[in-house]
Each structure stands twice: as C-alpha cells, then as structure tokens.
Image: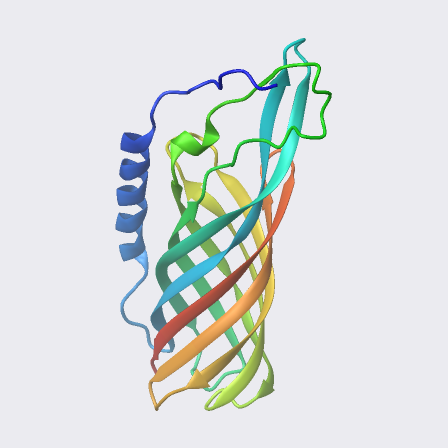
Length: 212
C-alpha cells in the first residue's frame, strides 16, 4: 500500500534563474583565437540517480534509477586544425530530468511507504564545464578522423548547492565539411561524483568553425 506522497515547495522560479545564469556564462568562451576553433554543441544521455522512500516504521529505502539528461552550449578548441591533439573546453547548460516515483513492488507490502514528489520538481538546469584533450587516433584531421576524448569538469552553477565533479572518457569522429567547418560527434561514459559515484553515458554532436 502507498500513502499520500510528500510535496516539497515548488522550485520552478529557481530553476529558471539557474538556466539564465548558466546561459549567460556561455559568453565567457572567446570568439576568436590564433589557432583552434569555436562551435555549438548539443548532448543527450542518461545518468544514475537515487530516489529515497520511507517505510512507516522509519526505515529508508533507495530506488536507483537511470534518468535522461540533455544539454546545449558552446565549445572551444585550442590547437591547429591540422593537429591530431587539441585542447577542448565545453561550457553548457545541463538539464536533468526529475526522478520517477520509487519502485516499491519488491518491498514488504504489509508496510506503507511515502516519498517526496520528485517528479513535481520538473527538469533541473545547471551550468557545466568540461576541459580536456581530443586525441586523433586514426585518419586525417583535414578529412575523416577517429578520435578519443578525455575530459574532466563539474556541474558548477546551481542554486541548490548540489554541485558535482564529472569525468568523461569517450570516442568519436570528426569530419571537415570544408576548409573551415568541422562536424564532430562522440559518445562518452560519464562519472559524476557528489558524496558517491553516479554512472551514466552521453552522446555529443557539434559544429565547429576552425581557425588557422
């Protein structure tokens, strides 16, 4: 049996302010460089999250869920467009979908269970920054190239003090559409850390304007 759920205060106003703060921070990426490039990036994936629930005798349980996330923002590269090794900076808005109701179907149904109304919080927006290296593995940087990426960073801009550290190793491809414009796609295993490790996976796609 399930008793009425607990309803926390509405956070829509705070999430809107967080999204505006993060979007403003995207302007920090320089628009010009002597060697490298700039671009726009989108992402989508899943992340691990923990949904707590409470038995009527006070015992707590945790339902571990895989929840969607998506992002959009700016990307900067450092290094000649013909180099196989380039520095990468990503600054973007990262949006996490809320938790579902915990699954208590495997619990002892002689008890009643309550939980916060996680889904009522809506999508959580935060600013994220990732810094690292793109490694050319096979192919030509001036054409089609297989790449590996190693990035570290954080979800740094929040209004609820729930910042977290991130690590993303991944693989991808780049393709020069013409002398200046490059298409990029990569997939990565994501590890988030805040008190414990949360695993996930993300896919990224970007269009880059490359300098000399």
